[in-house]
Length: 369
Image (cartoon, rainbow, N blue to C red; front, side, top):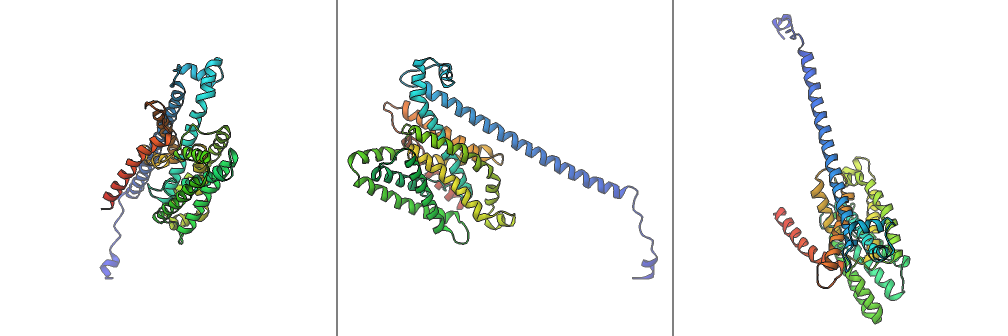
């Protein structure tokens, strides 16, 4: 350094410059914090509007399903009967004949929608629905075995369905696990296991007597009108317990979507959380299958519907559950009243879901290209 440089006086800082720079930094931080707060409030508002709107649509469809039929009833009379304030003739139609089916449609839709959202988010693939990766097939095989081999019913049949669903889920999980859970591998192995379960189901039906075989075939089509009172009670308890539990784990589910390594670095126990979420989803879909049979494609469609409605806002599990309930209710109304002859609910969802899968595959291929 030269003598001139050594003796040159330091350039004075303009008065208020450091204060201005600090003020400008604080102002930028305040603006960023304000923007984050506004964005969070906007997402919360959107989530509340979407959830409330879907719940209202679900309630309207619930009342509508008990209004229409061979005897048309005024909605106010239906509401009075639901609340226990109707006359005996209306109560017989509403509470005795139509309400069990309507409740089954809501509960089955809630269970299937929530389970589909959990599977799709956990495996990060829109095709990861329980009816495509073997869970519903495993529950169906166990239920058909209970019907044709052991004459089970009620709680025994529900227990068989849960055992079949959990067994298949554990098998697919073990076969797909290679130091982590890869969605594509899980789905492909699940499709193979589902094909095996369907073969076993066909064998059981072929070997059963004609009465059991007819009952099993009717059940395999899927209809919300088949659930017994015991099935409804078991399914209602499961939905009331497992759906809030799955919703409570939504934050963990969001972190798990980042991948196993990132989730571990953020403090999650990936293996434990994955197994717990899978158990919630499997139990929901297995009990729904035991109550109404394998109603196809509801779990597949509910998750993308909730994602489209919410964007980045809110709890997709709850919204997907409500979307599933709406899909099942609409499908059952169409199956019972829109055609000259009533058909099963599963036929309607199958007719809608098959083109949806084709569209989903075409879109995925275009995105990869």
